Image (tube, rainbow, N blue to C red; front, side, top):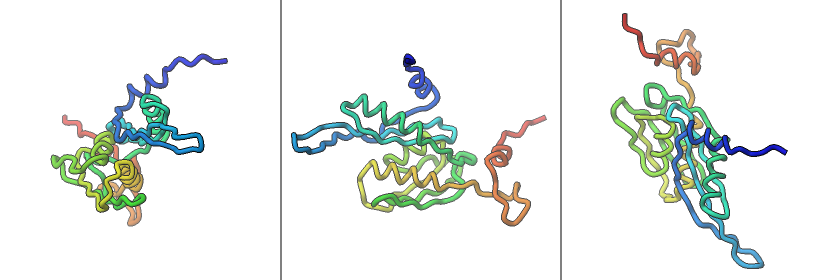
Length: 184
């Protein structure tokens, strides 16, 4: 048998920052009585365009947080961040939660509330505006809808890298376009 060393947990903590969005005590009623557990919602990100969200349950808080962190690592996405903002506006709906996110000019900052602010911050988006259109106060659904909106983002062509009418920018061309210019 192989011996577990626990190195993966250390690597996750070094590579990614994490934030707990929601921690709830949940109860399942069975024939023998009530069984309590904890549900944790965790967001991890490297502040360079990668972000993930995980929702897991455990018998105690520490176990739920560890499981949620591992789930978030498996559910990572890459967000197209161009000059500190997103390429276009997006509308998303998950359950009863609805969100509208829009790019902003440099210096505006993150104008978003609750779970969306934490997700955008860990994704490395510096200038963005988000508005929850729904009336739900459920933090889990609000986090999931913000994550779903980020999944819908696509790299948009800009005028400098479009040669054909229907050309689409790739991550490589966007990275070259946003690279700092060397002065001579």
